[in-house]
Every structure is written in C-alpha cells, then in structure tokens.
Image 1: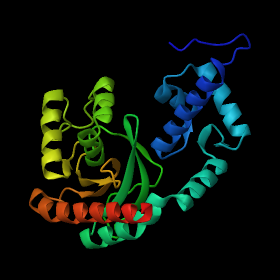
Image 2: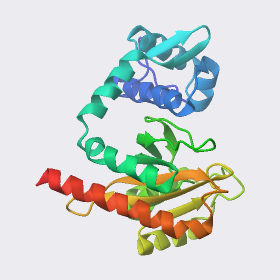
Image 3: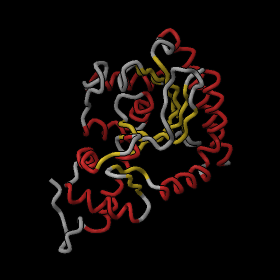
Image 4: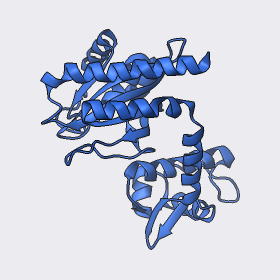
Length: 260
C-alpha cells in the first residue's frame, strides 16, 4: 500500500511525484486507448486519492486530455514526442532502413529500446497487407514474451535480471514462465544473433528481432518484424532472420559512421 505523504497531503516529495506521474503516463501510452480513472488506479496500483490528484495536475499542464470520464495522452506530450523523434540520431539512421525491412519482409517492422522491464517502440512502419501487426510509436509493452524483449534480455544482463525479479507471467499458453527455460532460450539468441518468438505475447502473432549495437559493441536498440503466424511460419524464420539481422547491422554501421 502506497501511503507515504508529506504534511500537505502530497505524495512523498517531488521525485516520487514525478515517478508516479510517469507511471500514469506510461499506463495510458501502453493501453493504446483512453482510460477511466478507476482503470488507471488498477493498472498503476496507486491509491485512488493519489490518482485523482495526479490526473488533475497532469490535465492542468496539458499532459493529459479528458473527455467525459476518459483520459488520454495530452497534446504537450505529443509535442515532446515529435521533438524527440525529430532530434533522434537513432531514428534518423534507422528510418529508411526500417522502411526497407518492411518492404522486403512484407511485414510490420519496428525499432525498440528498453526501459526497465518494458520495451518501447520508437519507430514503426506497418505492413500494407490487410492482416498485419498494428501498433504505434511510443507504445510500451512488457519485455517478457516478445522477440525484441528477448534481445534485450540476451545481451543486457541487467534487463534479464529486472524481468526475472518482476516475475514471468503467462500472457498466452505459449509464454515461457520457467527461468531455466528462458535462460536456455537467451543462450540460443546469443549464439545465433537473433530471436524468434511465436505466440508468447499475443496468440497468432510471431516476431523476429535482432540487436543494434554502438561502435563499442554495446546494445543500443532492437529491430523486429512482426506478423500473423500463418505467414510468419517457422520455415520462413531463416529468411526473415537474415533480413532482420542485415537491417540491424546496417543501422549499427550507420550509427558508427555518424559517431566517427
């Protein structure tokens, strides 16, 4: 139970207020739809009084927008996101190559970074096929159960430990929930240099991902293609892995060239 408050009834000083505000914004960004205050309270596990106070403040600062009982991300956050996108060297390097990956694979291609126990979509180029994976830049999803997340866990020990500490919930009947089985999978990812995940995050959704590194060889991001399991079958994995790893290597080279 979160009860730490100062004498004025506020929540534990400016640092904790920022952290809790970030939890509310992450919650809304990850939901992909407007939420009621009660849903935000449930998803953030914050007390309802804290949620109500944060919602009022964030709305007043144009960080949230309210329509009736529903809250969504505000225009000020959108402006920040656009500014970050425009100034991001990583996105600038990656965008044309992610477009090429989408076109060569025929599936939705994306660029992801890690954030705690989550992965965040920085860039997404959707497939033009009628049945395809749909998402949006800025969307936050748990690292566990996805191919991009598996890349982060395989090549960043701190990411693996954070996920293990948080637990391995089953998102579908195929989600790995045994740490030993997960570690075996991560070792395979390190050996082959890419990850394939079938239906662990969403039933019928398969993904192939590969690491992007900086000139020192440190993990920077992950690139992935995602699509329906009836197209992204296991026999197709080798071809898709070659396309994804090739794209990741080109982005890594572009980063190195920009840093030179």
